[in-house]
Image (cartoon, rainbow, N blue to C red):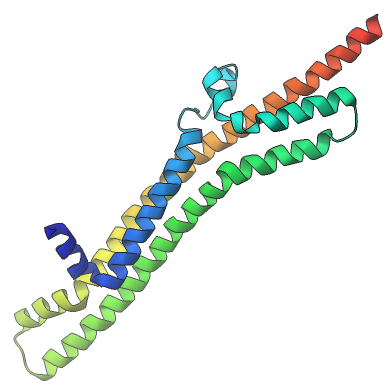
Length: 205
């Protein structure tokens, strides 16, 4: 409770609630993405036979099955099914990555807004106290508790949290997302390779 009181006193209820909602949404999106990318290394293509990795992309199994059937029938639908595979991959994982970056950037902007708001409030308090000839030490104390703390903490918190989110997304999540794309490519290639091999075997006979 003491932390929440300090938090809302320094961030103000408006910016405090916005920060908490943003942080909650970022954690939620991160956990969604980590469920798929947490067990994939940035060079997972060399371990493409790992059953854990195939389990991660099991949500694509119906599409792989349809692709295999389409190639066996030779109905010309393979290209459309491959496109559907990529759309499904993006809708399941890519959109959450984009949302995570969006929340991180939004938090930085909210921190900037908090800095402007806090600076304006502090300036108004400073002007009022200066007109009343209040001692400089008391002026500093009042402006800190009425604006300056909001300006400092919102910008500092937004910069730190935003930097962590952007760094983790670009350095940890995106490389693994691209590795996942390579694994999906490899799976598609193997399905198509089966059809090529079966045609060659039929030709040999």
